[in-house]
Image (cartoon, rainbow, N blue to C red; front, side, top):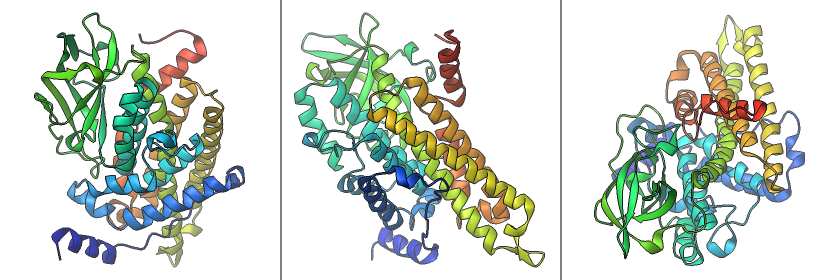
Length: 406
């Protein structure tokens, strides 16, 4: 038996069975179609089978299970809204949200892997690429044969991506790309990167950079306390010759990568709710089982207060997500509306994780329960794809018409 197989067998034996069922206090299921419910059931079974038995071990060892990439492709987790002719699922945005919710219920790092592939790699190739690029890359990405990453953030430019210094120059038969990107999910294992860089006039464009191009490297980021089952790194470009056919031709300017971030932020709004619901369900079950002073702690007023507030916030976030998904399906959702949902739901999830940790007491910091892992993961989720404060300012600009940043 291989070491990995033995570890997997040990994980299956040692961890509690995943008995998760989602809370639905306002009967939101009645707003979903039968296809939505079938998708949820399928991905939930996948998470219970392929992620839950192993995730605590992966997180403890800071191990990214690369084999999950192919499995995600097989179940349609990559690019679910991309048309079927390119390998995508051709699904609506509520289906996409449900997929992200169920995967992040398993782990935020696993959802990061899936949403980067779909929203930040496949989406720009489909939306801003030409037909040759779509046919070359999208089917392989959708199937999980290739893993992609998205290069926007730089060491000195996070919340201000327009200040990026990564650039490319026209050398006649190719472009010469130089610069560095940082905090890039999937990068150490990625087969390609959708990279955003400035041309000689300072205009931002997207380029597809493939693994193996001379001068392109992806150093891994070590020592993370968060998203430990996800792989994170840098993108380094040292005079990389990029073929001209790898430029995404159909949109330029900062608006292009920001459109990708809108798609990713929507997925995060659903995903963070999945983590919140997992924490709530774990706390609810634990409170019913844990005996103190001769009775279950669920009988105490302060514990009931915590659980009641958790369920209230989860229910509000469920309604928020459903409405936002409906607006996206109708082509009516705005950046500010997506921003509001991402900020609210991640903050709610963090607060629920912290309250759930209190209910679990000392057990809440152990790997026997998912609470501390979710809490650490969410500390990254609240920062990436726009920080909590940046999203407040996006909404503030929408309210007042006065931008607080350029």
